[in-house]
Length: 344
Image 1: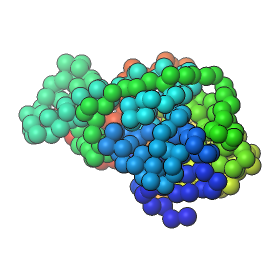
Image 2: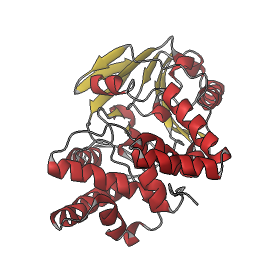
Image 3: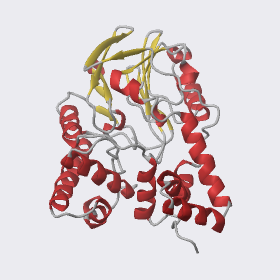
């Protein structure tokens, strides 16, 4: 099936909504219909994109004219920040996923975007501000200044102003069975992995599974939370399912070979990071040192920095990150797109 923007019919009332090229923020969603009943798997990164998606779905499937149920597969904004357009529906997420949604609200992202754009407009003065902030120990501001070109490049097409954080109205732990008309739908919590409360959505009778960001196809996965062993187990669970259609969180529709490649990547990065951790390498040095030739065709290779950092935290027993902002500065450096925080 061609990887094109829009709605792809998977058969018997199941659809995938795809957003090429699947990189930062360009996620997929899903629609499950039976009779007059409908379930939406994830919303999109902003209300403009979500409105476009809903209009496309309503043109294709009469049941989508009034969405009954929404499932947010996890807390990242590109999978839930369009919730306000379907707020009349029952919105479901895992308990941990719902709790995580408040940690990085859309208002914060809007502010980060504004600061990044402001520092770029300030030119050398903005660059100097980052250097001074670093010297004074104001690391968050220094990181924003350094990451500004990268942040604008990857998130500049999205509109974060005016987004209201609409949280789930129902939560669950482990698993939840639903009915969409007469169609059985199984929600399975497989996190913490990519985030704290990842969920996959399985439609057994139609042999379809929507995987959220357990699957990035054609791009490097990003391990915000871990442990990686949970993510590997989630891939193994999908591989064991009797399914024909596998919808990733990002990238084109895939098959079990695609799932296996993601699992192999995670195992490889885990083992390579462990070797370098034991050798006393720092996070950034280790990320640069890990050979990614087998994954050279995959996009977003800068995510290896976050993956190594998460693994090092796992190996050492360190606590969770206080902020994701420094991660973007590190990824910008890795990608050669940072704004060096030193005076010119």
